[in-house]
Length: 256
Length: 267
Image (cartoon, rainbow over all chains, first blue to last red):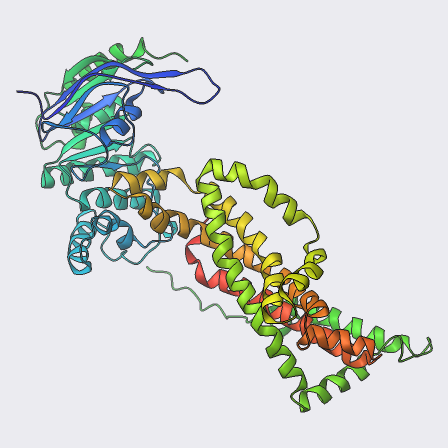
């Protein structure tokens, strides 16, 4: 019996033409439970985004096995969806058309698409902005669209690649609260890549620390904080003890 | 206590201030024509070699009274439209493939650059030899001149497509065809419109040159014939009409560009 998401000995090396190969992942192992919120922190360039892209099916590993719910990953699939750091909204599409993109690609008929996008736009708090274009939205609103688009195809696994890194600090705090609310409503399995230890602890059931490149799982931390969580939790003793522990595991990997 | 703002009187800028740009542009045109007309107060006027705006205008009105000018324009409009349409379809398709398939781009780039950089109007006599005198030959010349901006712009636009958007569509289950339809073509559209601005000018040259060499009707043929007949007032009137059409088309595309891509305002 394996875990819901299971990665065993995943290896991936980038081979850019006429340059030295870059090993991104080596002997990378991971187990994620169904419905779990797991964060991955690690130094810049450690391969954490690469791993999400492998799991998404956009990159193919050189070796190793990776499966979701027992099914081996061979390419993109509707059981997984990604929220991208730079949003990745199509600038010529309105909010609603952006949210419906995945449904359109699944050839879902228009009325059904509309029902789903309406519901999700409301869920992420963008009701009334359906006909706006991305350039008319703030960063936080753009990422709400990104989240709604990822949820629209109703994936089992939500991959989030530093989704709030492009946002200012206050917007980021607010988006974290929103994300927890939406996660509790939808009960997806979430893999969340971030640089911020605070963010990782606040959101997650478990936090994985990765080594520097080539990336490997270094240590797994369980976050024993009750849910639902609130902002005050960030100033409690338990929160900060864990933060220090994770920082100690992480700091040896960081080279400036 | 709440402050109540005094109503601010709305001062509307005067007509001159609001349309300063257009008015100054028109002023320069009028000044040019006036200088041209006034020149002959000091320089002796010989209608065999030159004309003046007043005579040009009279010739224009004269030609408008008969169907002469309209017929010529219609005869030229057909090859212009056909050639330009073929240039859009073939140029854009070829450009996108060259931009998206790196190897196709590498292979065709040098060859097409040579054609683009060389004066293709020099090939006009050859086109006449191959295709004779008529609509097809004229269309061919227009196409040859107009196709290159579409190829190169579509290619550049395709290379500039945001890779993230490609990843987004692929991750949501999009196939190769979806990448073209949902990402590449919409990304490239503004580049195509920009190409159209250049191509329209080249297509007009194509029509005129084609009709100089390969026609028995059309506005280019009319210009050449009036030139041969020393009817310079009529010849210049035709040139003036061509100029007005060129400006109208270019400005029309500029306007369409702003209207069609509201999402580009923020970029």
